Image (cartoon, rainbow, N blue to C red):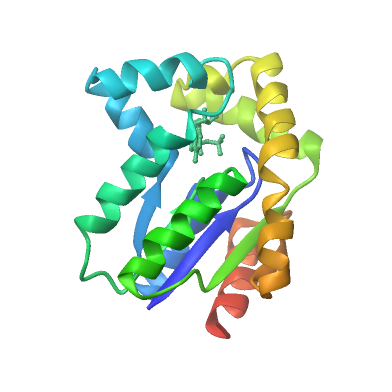
Length: 190
Ligand code: ADP
């Protein structure tokens, strides 16, 4: 079983690259951002609660996202492996993921960390905001807050995975195909 954590700041291209990895390695894609947006679209209690945080560019509380991941893992017991996209985003989420995966028998295989310059992130997100309609991609101050939250709460995860030899930094600048090629080369060796 191959369990990949696709990591990087907002706008790094995690969702785009996840599509390539799914095709190449036949994995199940779990994006907490997508799961949360579908809860919002369904106007569930969870979605309404999560929206308050997402609209400000803050993280949704750990318990909420960990609960969503648990139910996804429980309902996909026969999967060949997973790509976690946008999760974990805090050290507590990473610890919870380890516990859940250990119960299922297979740990995280690797953390693929897409590295992109800050101005490029802002440009990509503003561009995405024009077509996706995502409110959190249309306001520069919300985007900057998400990048700050990433630096403060999510970046420390590198130091969680590095001592386990699971951290792989990948240049996330350039064409989509080039970046996909770099990712594939790393994943093939896991
Ligand atoms: P991006 O990577 O561009 O920020 P996502 O779709 O991954 O886009 O996330 C959008 C928003 O959803 C985040 O800003 C955050 O509010 C919320 N979110 C997504 N995943 C998590 C998570 N693992 N923990 C907490 N909040 C999350």
